[in-house]
Image (cartoon, helix red, strand yellow):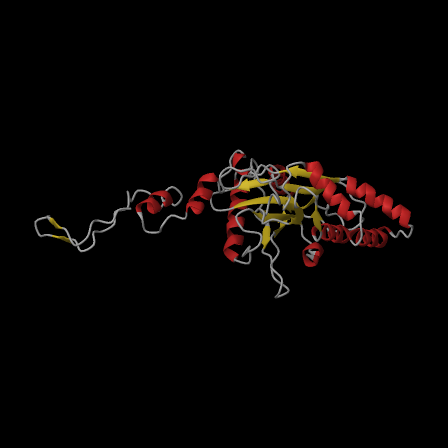
Length: 319
């Protein structure tokens, strides 16, 4: 990131985030992905009323530490103002081969802090007040409160304990819980909440991350509604979290990325080399379309010279 920040270029710098890659295993170092991004951006540029000169470039993320995963974003640079503003105005871009989101490139000092803290697990109540009361109660007591006081003292250069406690009280009141519409097997409701911090006093992103880690690493017991914990769920690289429980991207006009049908295809886990498998795959892979329904060959069957078939042992396999 420091080299990307220091890079001098003639146009704008942009951050490009892929929707098609899992954020836990992005595999973003593949140069094929960079080529696909360049091709799609060029297509968007050519459709503009006044196309910009094709001088823009896209840099793939690299791993500088062997034990660390690569960044989950690409750098776009040398983007003319007209093209950059056009990409930023829509934000979401989706093609059959790749889907991505465009953000302005900013320095770490100007980067806004997130609001998402984590997702609850273990609470049996569907009341946001019960969940928030449990979280605030734990964070108001040591050792969590002591850790928060230390973070605030270092970041804001404060040494008055009463003032620091007052800041913590304001911070905890800004915690917010939003219930997700999630169902378990059998249609049963499973109370899950996304926890947000709508305001904080911190002056640096580093202090905010320390505060979030304190909140994430506690357990939150209740007398009647179980013991809750917070975790960062496996999430979409674009959304971070789906506050409504279901992804809203397929409802965006012009969306050509994954949808409920393709999710169902993966979820069903159809047996390979069967009729249902090929018929379903044909919906998503044009090369397969037109081959007709898959027919398995009969075991032991042979074709006679006059076109008559001889039935081998066992019934015909049905798919």
